[in-house]
Every structure is written in C-alpha cells, then in structure tokens.
Length: 381
Image 1 (cartoon, helix red, strand yellow):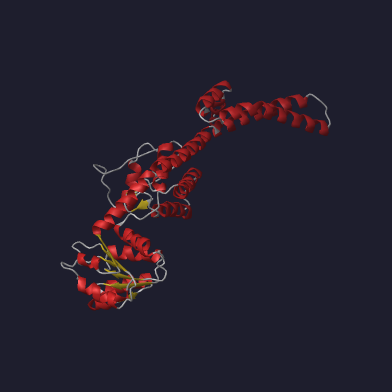
Image 2: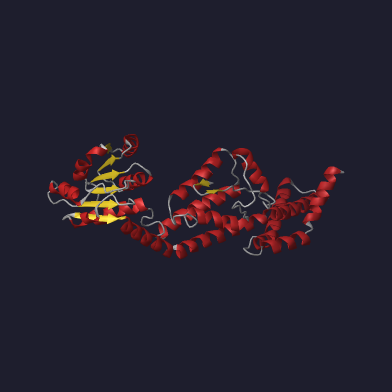
C-alpha cells in the first residue's frame, strides 16, 4: 500500500510475521537501500495490523482527516495483489473488510464533509456565496499547485467555464486542457476579470495584480452581476480596498484559512463515531481470525472419529452376513451417530473467545497430537 506519506507491506503467514527485517530487505532489493536505523518503521500483527489498515482506509490516519483518496489507494493495492496472485484468503478478508470500513465511515459519519485544503476551501466558499456554480465562469490566476487544486475543486462543483491564466503560458495551457477550459493571455487580466463570476488568484507577484480601480472597471460592464474574488496569494494579489466595490465579495488568505480550520474542527468531532465503526470491524475480523485457529483441530477430530468408525464398522461387518442393504443402513447409522457426538464439541471449539482453550483441551483429550505423530512415524519408518 503506497500513498503520499506511507509505504506499507501486508503479509500473511502461517506462523505469523514477527521480524520485519526480511520484508525490509525485500523492499531494499526492489526500491534501493532502505535504512532501518532512525527510520519510522513499525510492525503490527493480527488484529493490531487489521486495526491500522482499517484506520488508514477510514482516513483517520491521513494528514487530512477523512480524505477520500486513500480509500481508492487501499482498493488499488488489493487489486494489484489480486492481479499478481499474491493475495491469500486472510489478506482478501482483511482488505475487503478495510474497504467496507472506509465506505461505512464516510457514509455514516461526516468525517469527509467539507473542504480542508486552502484551494478546495476557496472553491467551497465560492459555492456558499454564489450558490450553484453551474452557470458561472471561473478565472484561475496561477497554474501552480494551488491553482491546479482550485481548478479541480471548481470542476467538481460543475462550474460552467474555467479560464486559466499564468505568467507561464505553457503551464496555463496544460492545466486548461486537463480541465476542459480555456487559456487567457496574462497581459489581458482586465478583460479576463470582467468576464469572471469567480476569481481565485494565487501568484507570487511582489505587488497587487488588481488595485481597486481595476476591479471597479471590471464591475462597470457586469450590469450588477456579483463577482467573488478569493485571494490566496501571499503577499496579496488584490488590493483589500476592492472589497468596498459594490457587488464584489473579496476573501483573502486569512478568511480562507479560518474556514479551512472550521472544516477540520468539524471533521475531528466525527472521530469518535468513526472509531466506533473501526472497533466493531476489528472485533469481527479478530473473531474470524480466531475461528481459523480451530480449523486444523476440527479437521483432526473428524478424521480421528471417522477412522475409528470405519475400523470398528469393518471389524463388525466382517463377522456378520448382512445384506448389502443392511450394510448401507448400518453405515449411515454409524456415520450419523459420529456426527451427532461431534456436533457439540465442534460448536464449543468455534465459540468466540474460547477457541484456544478448547483447542488445547480437545487435542489432549482425544490425543490428536499423538495421532499426528503416529502418522508421521508410519510415513518415515
């Protein structure tokens, strides 16, 4: 599982995975030397490993709480393992459970509601101020990371038209193409401003791109249509006095950061509910893991009972002259009797929380380990 801030390897083994160094060595072979000393490595097994993956899938372990991308990355990791045939029943159950947890947390809590990045918050502010952006034109001034994030957020809100402008015409064209938008020459900012209902600007200019008079000139031809300007540049791209122009809603980086902090605060309030969903899933997965511990014992118990039944049945039938039909009836009766006798012990073995204690008692009472030793001796003698 690889994300922007983690590389994790999930391994299933019959004896457990106690020492992570062989796995790190394998990663080193594939990706180059990985230093163990001082590196933020950790290892978890069993239910603890499941809990960690469930927290990751839920977005609780993300740098931005509740972000949605990580769930797709978890799904992608499992898809890749499936394609490479490196998954096992345990890993399949683990990742299917993690994906279900991620979906449930997002569906049943508000942990993914509201924007958290500066750019996505800026776009959300535009929608909250102007309403539906379906018929609006957006101007993005910057083709850097902040501009790209803002453009993606606006596109997700179904803005009708995106205009991109930047000092780098090549980067502006690349972003506009990706968004299905258009490019405006940076030298014609005034005309672009007048055409826009929403403006998000984030350049590295040392001075204002727009003074108050520039904004007044742009508004003069808009016939009272409001304009929202979101200035997330440091230093500012827009003269603060522009907020006094009628019809203009101007937000600066401080306003946007405040809104982003509020969104994060609301997401953090959902952590308790999200954690409860994770806890329930971990408990169910751990119970399933425990049930696997009894499978070999159940198989050994049934095998021993069946071997005894057949041996005694053959010994008895050899001394009688039953018809074929009667032999079939006796066969069915002894088989049913064994199943009924084993039903309660096997049910006890599968009880949550009691598995290991009952496993040890069953193996001792029925000498199942002795049977296995005898079998090995007969094969090697």
